[in-house]
Length: 426
Ligand SMILES: *Cc1c(COP(=O)(O)O)cnc(C)c1O
Image 1 (spheres, rainbow, N blue to C red):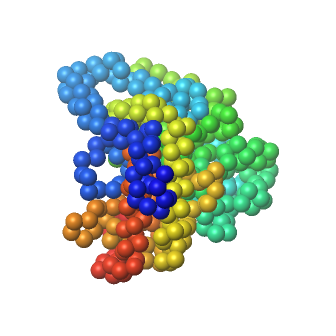
Image 2: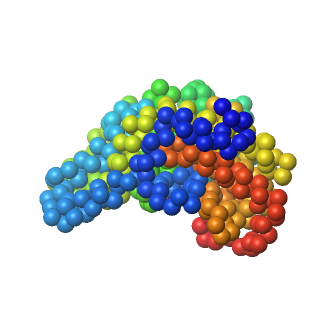
Image 3: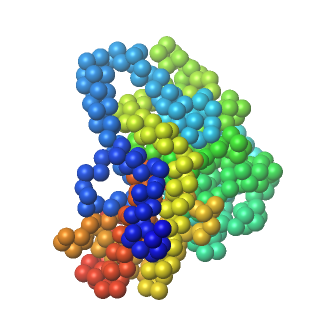
């Protein structure tokens, strides 16, 4: 094997990678683009356009309304069942609906009603802002009967279990956490946290947005109560593809959705004027499912199933470790810091590198000088360059080239060519 810090080492690693052929299943037409943002928007699978063409022209175009009886009506549940497999849940425990934020609202609302009499909601200071906004909104809607308590992070990277345990007590109705934290990639031990919460009688909702398709999730085995997550990141469902929602079987009949829409009614097509909740998890549907973007999830689920989530995780660990070694060797002395856990058991599939000039370094990566490759990571305030590693299509050479470019950008101060103005989406 060539020396680890050489380009040849990256080449050799790609050559020996048993998952390397999966890259061919994705639409990556530009050889001069290195995409390290699959944790924000996954790449288009090659077979998606053809599938969508069929759904649009045949199912919608030819079959029109008849398609509801020719597969559409069952598709959200069938898709949920395929996804359940990947999440370590039973098929009748997962459905596809709405966005992650809306699903969090529905489940958190239901959990608070069920846990009537308790007065606190616990989350952490590293959670995704949308999740915290939804919880803040619930506190407001419930007339401030609840207190939202956030576990602090000592370093902005991780959360200590004893600090979390301190905030959980007999007043805790709900604990709402991201399994993998969006900025630092810190990953909770789901089983341990579930046990801590259950000891106090609290329910837990896990946001799996950065976990689904990236790490093996074992909802049943970990004693998880509820979960939500999006499908356009490591699940490659495309922009705005529907989110998912999980509720463990024995809890389903005890929970009520706050949105009594017709798709969550017992028999929507009886058009009864009185609402009666559907059995099981179906009660958490609200309105018509988005058939086009729901269908577009299938190619990627097939690819992930073929590759195997355990093998993807092994490659992801190998690649994130590799990135961190390169960071130590080439970048640490240039003012970069590691914004992610060093222990792979506590880290998801992205790695954050911090630098005071992170914003302009990102701009320089995305807008390279003539003849150089475009490199797309993403920037997260205040100083994180987030490098998403999607082992289905990212190569070791992508990582090597991205690190070498960051080194050059900082050594030559070429980020100074860019201004500090932020655009609407970063
Ligand atoms: C990406 C992400 C979301 C997305 O929420 P939407 O409502 O589907 O836009 C939610 N939570 C976390 C933790 C995320 O990373």
